[in-house]
Length: 464
Image (cartoon, rainbow, N blue to C red; front, side, top):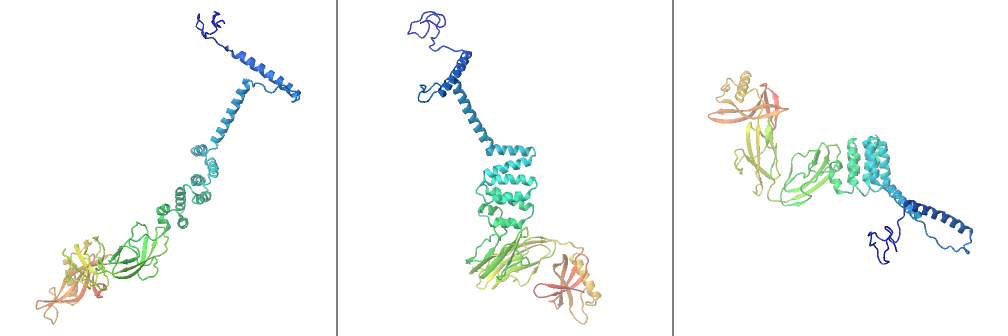
């Protein structure tokens, strides 16, 4: 056996040449040209064999099999790879991800018609995913096809995936066209609590009250635990309220007894809710706190301080920061708000002698005026002298020993005009007798009027 490189003799059991170190190759190297020539020859031979086999009968043929040439194997491998690549590419180009990228590219090029067509295909291939309905609907709106967008959104809210996205789009669209009635209709049929909570304002239901219907052993102050942007109206006699009924503006106080309160809610879109009825039975020895209006604050016009009192109770008050007792002044009619700073403490007392909590109010009344109280008093005295009601500035009265004096009481307002109020007293032998005659003086123009009280803290102004 000779070395194939240097020609030196090699022992038969050696794999390397002892002279040059070359490896003994059992299978010799072939040049590409030689291999191509062999492949061509094999192909020609296979054609001859196939023709010969075709001419021979299967029974007489002695050829049962033949070796597949190498180029055929390569060809089959290439063919199979091409098929796999084609199938893979076809699957990729028909995938949702690829088509979505195409739609995004179309949108970036302002080709909204193409984007709409692509999203339509994606939607049809994903019929239970609301996301693709909404993506197409967004493009339809850009193309000024609101009806198509609306129909897609309505279909989307009925699907199993991405319902919140569908409701977000539908609610936004209906609000943009101010179709609040249809918003409410769709939400009334919505089965998802998270979505209902998100859009409760559009449903237009009465916000929840802080106390449910039931029996209580204490007085209650009803209020609403959710912020709202409309108006709440109510009745206390079991009738259905409307927008002309009393409007809820402060907590509603309930004392002993049986109460039926009915609410309606008008939201900021002027939709009106169905009525909500609450029933309460209250049995308590402690009276409810008096409800005092107005609230503490600064005021430009003289307000009347009015109390809502539980039946069977009396309310006592103080103005010197002390706690009221049954010896304090009793509230019997509206109290005029004093000028400047004032503080009130109110307390209700039941027939059994139990007292409520003390309710405090602080007011600051500053009115715009052209006259001081003293100047207004002088204007009143001059007016009364001119009419002959009194004889002089002292208040002398014809044929009487005593004199008439005029004491400032409080300010009042009417149709945003403030007045100083003075009361007439008759003084004789150091005895001061109020005569229940009142006069009002316009603090801007000095016009004088006579006031007629009705006994309930209200006054009627008449020319004088």
